[in-house]
Length: 98
Image (cartoon, rainbow, N blue to C red; front, side, top):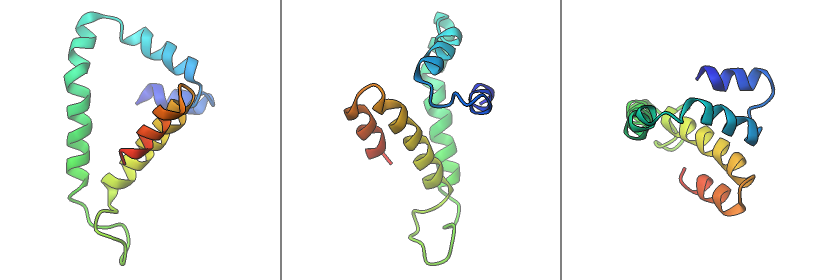
């Protein structure tokens, strides 16, 4: 989270090369990779699960428009923008999973 905030403040949030360099500098150690592979998706899934119990954001909106939907939309939107720099298919597939 600190790395994302620093990237945002420097205006580098959508700088693909900068994001990859930052990621690779912290995620090359085998033990770190072994821990991150199962734990990061579990943490993300748990966060979505906890937020899915919230009420809709405004009266009249469908029941699925809660905080987990907003977080998933922001997450998928970010990866759609970043992924479109790799290939259009990656960007579309990231947006599809919301």
